[in-house]
Amino acid sequence: MQTEYPAGADDFLTILAARRNYTLRRLVAPGPDDAALLRIVEAGAQAPDHGLLRPWRFILIPQHKRHLLGDVFAAAVLARDPACGDEALATAHDKALRAPCLLVAVLRDEPGTIIPTHEKLVSLGCAIQNMLVAAQLLGFASGLASGAAMDFAGMRTLLGLEAHERAICFIGVGTASTVKAPRVRPDVSQFLSSL
Image 1 (cartoon, one colour):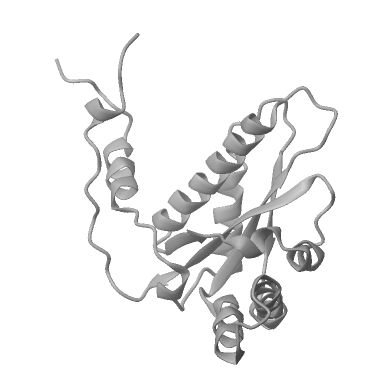
Image 2 (cartoon, one colour):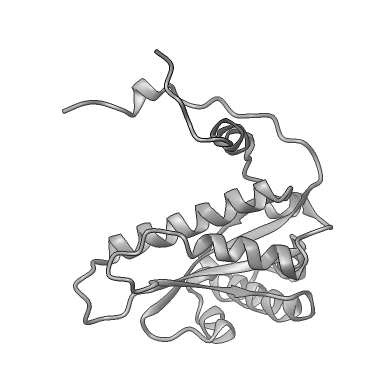
């Protein structure tokens, strides 16, 4: 006997399987307009949230502020390697210009709650995945990026992070400049077992 699934379930699973992670340099215009971005971010709010803490938030880095992010990237490289040279600084600065839509995912790990940090991270991860899938459903490509600059003091200052907050990764959304082949996914038997 075949299981009956709700209408649209097969379509959703097909779209989910078609999702690819793109490096931010492979994301070009057009990106989501304001209405599409709102829908993408609203999808994040559907994530599991033990204790209803909303232990995350997202910060949009608009195009006209990307130079500020580039300055932070360059300063972070210079702090790690004072002899890095102008080419390395320019390359670091240019990373801020990638992806037409750029968000920063921030973990909010407020003290004094009984919810452990790892559960808050899981909630953030679910929110991010919801946003990536929503972007896919709306016809956009997406990708995540992180790096040493995430914990740089200048990044904290730029983003206005509070003491209990930590920048986790960037989320880029746009149009894929090239079509990416599907990667081989593990067979379910490799990661599903029964007690």
